[in-house]
Amino acid sequence: MCFPVMRNLSISNARRAIQNPVLIKRELHRLLSVPINYTNSWYIDKSLPHSVDMMDENWDNLIIFDACRYDFFQRQCNIQGTLERKISPGKRSWEFMTESFVGREFHDTIYITANPHSQKLPENTFFKTNYLIDQWNDDIGTVLPSDVVSAARKALREHPEKRLIVHFMQPHRPYLGPTADRLREEVDLIGYRNQGDGLQIWGAVKERKVTQSDIKKAYSETLDIVLQ
Image (tube, rainbow, N blue to C red):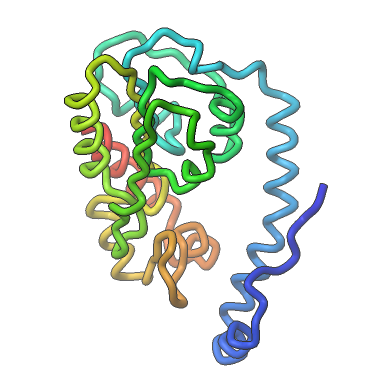
């Protein structure tokens, strides 16, 4: 197993770190967490039962909520139907896409996705792939659920005979809703692609600027928004 040691090494970054020592502390926190995360991933791979091949399942529209916990979904979802718990073919986005899509062709399916990793998929994987990266919200650092819904409705109108995969980024961080808005103001939280010295949400937890209660509430509100 190989662990990354440092990232974004440059003279300008070194100067920033000297001028703002808290950045060094944050990098050390990140480095110390790497072996723990890799060990946990290895344990999960070895201990979990066989994952589901969702492309072999019988469905017309497959809706993906990125990083959605089963227990929160079970509590908050009021969609009618039978709820089952199954194992994903990947713990992270690209692993999930590799196991589910890469090396296969699904020309009966349109993939509508807000996930940045989807840009690495081979072009001929689906009948059409609608990357929504141009809908990126720079203020929050994600693609909003409303933009995903609009793209899905358009695809359904234009290609009613095709299956749809609709991949929302929520409830993955950065979170949405009133709690997340408050935290962004209080702690200078940043989302993906945002530049500057602000914190990602879990970095704020490590520095004890955000509580676990805040995290759970922001996550729950984000899930409610995407479910709606």
